[in-house]
Length: 295
Image (cartoon, rainbow, N blue to C red; front, side, top):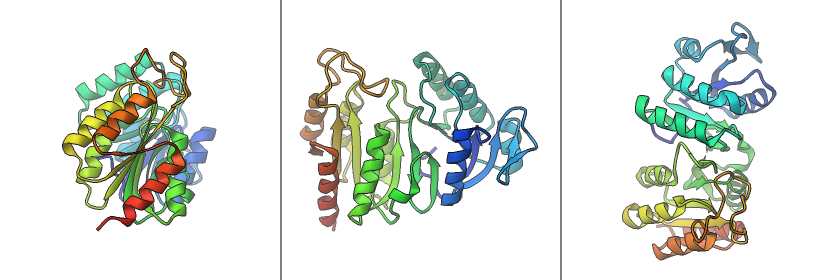
């Protein structure tokens, strides 16, 4: 499944009857996203502001033809919700839930790869995805995004995702798609998945990548950039001042020994020709200059 969403994407909100699910689900709908159903066991036959509620994902998909899911449920139910969506035939699942045990994440990640290889999971613990002017699934505010391209954004950090969108929009630089992959140890979608999609997308002409300390995803992305990317990439790595062994915000943002440091990631990306910023504002300024130079 592609990382891209558009006006044709039909979304079921798993947890629409809850406070957070209702707020963000209806906000996505008001942005123009096709929110066609909600699922809450035991509340089938009711509705939330006109959006029909079903007891199961299978019922919701059969009635609406939905192809995407927005999972807004507590951590203890998230794994079951994700697998229920995949079993019902959903091809794109966005999970914003924070605090899912890493063991659960590893289990449903591998079950998806084994039983539903065509299903894409975005998250968990992510802000979601927005294609400005077309579709918004998650908790990103549509007000800070600007349609018209030419920049694709992929980020581990939710907060820095919003800052990148806002700073580019303030400079009149539009975005094609912005993907928050989340900062948990077992993300369903990786930097490389998004970089490959942006490389193949004719509307995306430059990419902003926002990483952070912990793990090796950014170094792996650097290798991919060196071997596969023809489009300019601007990067920022959060956590330059983070002390070793201390978790910084995300479950996956922890330095172990000499691995996973911001300095090592920045060096790897700079070595393959990516433009590496020292702070989020500089990353936005760099991208503005890159866009000015596009032929």
